[in-house]
Amino acid sequence: MKPEMISIRRFSKILCLLTLGLIFLGALVKSTDSGLSVPDWPTTYGKFMFAYPLNKMYGGIKYEHTHRLLASIIGLLTLTLTLWLLMLKGLPEWIKRLGIFTFVAVVLQGILGGLTVKFFLPVWLSTMHGVLAQTFFLMLIMIAYGLSVERSQRLNIKEDGYDARFLKLTVLLAAMIYIQLIIGNVMRHAQAGLAVPDFPTMGWTFWPSFDAAWLNRINQWRFENNLDPVNLAQVAIHLLHRFWALLILINLLWVNKVAYERCLNRPLILKTLYWLNIAIVLQITLGISTVLSHKEVYTTTVHVTTGAVVLGLAFLMILRSGPLTFKKFKVLLTK
Image (cartoon, rainbow, N blue to C red):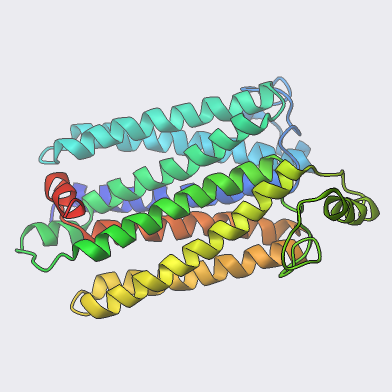
């Protein structure tokens, strides 16, 4: 194996982990309401961000400025990865193109992050920023998998036994998780995380009525806990997040059933599914804990980060359970 391939494989995996750390920091910025602790961009209180004194990084500035620093480092590392991919001989063209798209995505992500500050954190712009972060993470996972030893070994052997039904269910599961992350982003930035502050009940009833009395009961609790009142739209997006989580869990059980019927001879798929099961159960537990703890900062932040892990594992399971070429992959999906 060529030394440069070993190095770039490790580099791509490290970049994936750093991006997951950046998602954690971004969630922490939101959980601590630190998004405007540094009110200017691209400078930090008028200084070049890397020249800002460490002894002035306190309170919300500590979270927001650290997030900016790591984001800038990841941007530089992504540029390095892209140039490396373009210069490395023998790589498929699709990996090189994906490297370019990934760099464009990280630049756009940085611009969106700056615009959220410039426009004082509008919901739609903050949501786009959060969703693009998850998309960028998936792009890095695909690059890392494209460079991996596992994929190169699969290229050298004839693989049979792809299961169209399992692949379709896996793609559906990943799509549902991606949609759930969009819903979650809208909910967080619309200040709807505690629009329904109880669980398993919803507004202290198992069947929400969506009438004025029911909403008043929720807002009375929020008033007593020094929270601003919410409207029915905020309540609806919160309940949609809960309902969609239930649908994901049902689909996950279906995926497990099909996997143990048809994929027992594919240990990598079963291993990925095993960790995906654990991650989704943990994610649901953290979601419930976020409500019951009234959005305790680190519980909420880990909940967001685990959502990215769940999405990454679902995407990895797609990569492992389908053909290596897009043409064959598309044919299998249309069966």
